[in-house]
Image 1: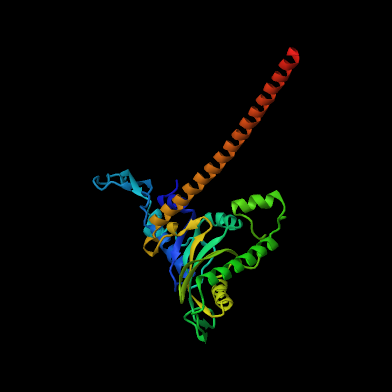
Image 2 (image 1 turned 135 degrees about the horizontal axis):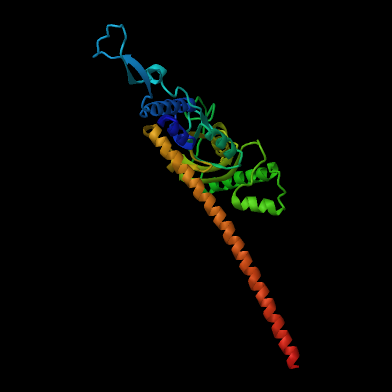
Length: 337
């Protein structure tokens, strides 16, 4: 019979996401969540101790003259199964991490518990994009493209307008769309490529250079600006470099002041657990929420396929009935003539 802690662990197995704050390494986030999960599992009520029957001397009866001893059966707990003897039931958990974030970045970080690590590998075998918001500032360039690094150049930015900004972003997005087609193993003139593009699954086969599938400016208040980026196979350092290159294309300089991931595959900021909700109970709720959402999506997709099949069957039946009607009309006309 499984203990309550083991049953709770099996319910925890799956995927969930947390919000990683800036300035914190992803390993510290993972270790903190692992510690909280182990503590939550070990705090579950322990199962009652099993009992065994032993024959003990009867203290109320005096020994007989013949020297015989009166024994009585007594049910006593098996102390070898006591938590103070066996120790904590869980001492370590395997918590996997999806696409990582460096220490300076923040946002959605996907984690997996137990057998959820297998699902994590399967999930990231699919080419799904990730969304970021990049905070930039015109007027200076630094050694590693971050605003806290050593400044290597300063420049003016009064000549930059939002129209020029949009033109540069369109140019970069077009170049990346060409790279997306180059690294894809699917023939761009085939029906398969069209269907993948409609579903948003068209991407490079395996590892490739970082590719920006979407790029737009959502805030422009010089010298500050904010970009929204959709990308594949990226690193946070590459995204900071993109901000630097945008500044150079605009005949100025720019530095990245913040990188925040807002979506990683199916997980968004609304699904992410903040620092105050990294407990075992909150993680369990997040895992169940993701499982129910995935099941609903699968039902919808299967329902859509069924609807399509029914629609196709109805169209075929309608076409056959129209042909039969036309044949009857032709036959009637021939008989009349």
